Amino acid sequence: MESFTYRQRQILAIAKETGRVDVDQLSTRFEVSPQTIRKDLNDLCDRQLLQRIHGGAIVGSGIENVSYEARRILAPEAKQAIGLRAAQLIPNNCSLIINIGTTTEQVAHALKSHRGMMVISNNINAIEILKHSDGIELIITGGLVRRSDGGIVGDAAVDFINQFKADYAVIGVSAIEEEGSLLDYDMREVRVAKAIIANARHVILVADQMKLSRTATVRLGHISQVNTLVTDEPLPPRLRKICQEHEVAVELASP
Image (cartoon, rainbow, N blue to C red):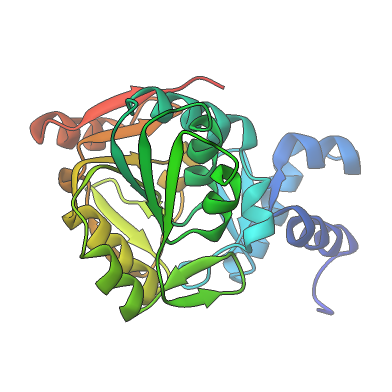
């Protein structure tokens, strides 16, 4: 790292600790102009150490996701608002499948007061969140436990999900491309997510705007396979048009 400036090293350290850095905050912290910080971030992104998003940068690239703990603190207000709005779309007395993700976990938090529900999940954290909710019957899939985030993946999880036909599914993704592709990083996780989509009558995708700034390598599906998208800001024109053409309802949740 000899070619890095001291400031760039500090920016990298902050990004690795928190998962994200913000141009304005860094400008204030280091007492330099936003333009100088943008040059630093561009340099670090050119070296594939960070990935640019609107207003800053995040750790991660197109082939490796940000760590689970870092993802938990990225856009927390937006994720909480999305979770609340998604939960409002899910009635009592229904069956639901929840997959892996920090945003889907916010949906689980917002479902605690629901009644007469059966929730199936390959997300250990979602099960932990809902385990004290008397009105919800919980079913956890079998499979390989991914230690990094408590997700259950693999063929056993796919086979387990294929036993059900749920009223609703809540899924998260790592990236959404402007032409509608839904992307993720882990092929094993993607196979489970595809099974969830195939075995739900109504699919709700929860994704904050950061997902539109990222990329990933494994194709999970297309936005046209989703019934409802819950996000926190208006979509870019091309993606909005695709949702309209495929009758995907778009719900905006304000933090």
